[in-house]
Image 1 (cartoon, helix red, strand yellow):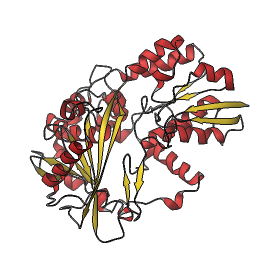
Image 2 (tube, helix red, strand yellow):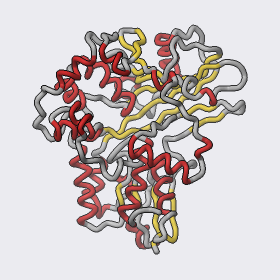
Image 3 (spheres, one colour):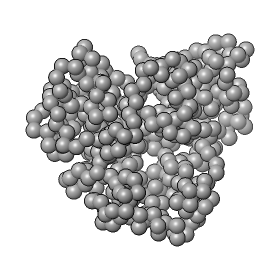
Image 4 (spheres, one colour):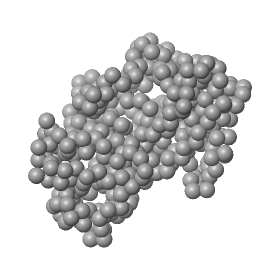
Length: 426
C-alpha cells in the first residue's frame, strides 16, 4: 500500500489524485498546491447576478480517445447533468472566423466550402489538398509547423490559417513550434503514408503516450526526495518541475528549465445589448494582422446559459500576448491592467464594431501558462523520461509541458501516469 504525493492542484493534479484514489494499491493521496485555490488555469468568476466569466479554458471538445476519457471522468464523478452541450448544428460549432485585412471572414467548412474560393484565400482549399498527395516526404526528424504546412499545403494556408490556429491553441508562433510535438497526427501521417491526406484516410498508426498526453498544474516547491523519505511517496510532478527538484537531480532540472512558456492576458468584457455582427464561436487573428491580439471568443454564443438574466448582454473574451507579449506589451511584471483593457476594448471596437464601452470587465494575467513545444521538444521529453527510468527515481513526469496542452490531454495524462505506476485503474 502506497502513500502518493501529487504536486499541483490544477486539473492535471486533481485528475491524477482522482485516478490514484481508485487504486486498491494506494492507501493515501496527498495533494499539494502552492496557491490559495485549486483548478490551475481553469478559473471562473461568477457574479452575484449569475453571469459567469472564464479566465482560462471554457470548453472541451470530446473528440478521440482523450475526449472520451474526459467524458468518462465526468460521468464517474457524477457531473454529467452539469454539462452544457454545444451540438454540431449550433452556430458556435459551424461558424469560426478569421480577422484579416481589417475584415471578418468565415472559415470554409465542409465539402462545399473546400470547393469554393473563400476570402481571404485566393483559391479553393481543395487545390492544396489535391496537390498535397504528390508532395515528397520530408527527411528531417522535426520541422516547424509553418514550414511543414507551407511545404505540403502551400504558403498561403500556412501564413493565414495555420498561423492563426497556432495562436489560438498555443498562443505561439507557428514558425518556431514543432509539428512533430504539436500536431503528431500530421507528422505521423507523412512519415507512414507520405501524405497528410492519405494518412488521414488510411490511418497512420502510432499514438501519443497512452491515449493522449500531458497534464498541468503548478508545483509546490517541495523536495521530492524528502517527500519520498517522509511519506514513502511516489510524487507525480507537473509543469514547475525544475523548482521542485533537489540539486542532485540537476540534469533533469536543467532540461525542465529549457522548456519555454508564454504569458497570456485574458480580458473578459460584457456589453449591454447584442453587439455581434456575426454568430459563431469567435475569431482568430494572424500575426501579420495584429501581433498583440490573438483572438476573441464570443462567449455568449456557445454558452448563453452564463449570461446575466437581467436583460440582453454580450460576453466576450479577448486573448492577448502569448509569444508576442513582451514585444507588444513589455514585461508581464510591469504591464498595467488598464493598458491591457484599453487594447482589448479597442480590438472589439475595430473588429466587431462595438460603438460604446463595456459595462463590465476583468483582466486576468496568466503568467507562463502555456508551454511552447519548439523544435526538438520530443527529444527533450524522451531524454527526461529516460533519465527518470535509468535513475529509478520515485516520480512521474506529468504536465502540459510534455505531451499535450489541451484540457483533455491534461486529464488523460493523469490516468496514463497512474496506470504506468500501478496498472489499469478500476
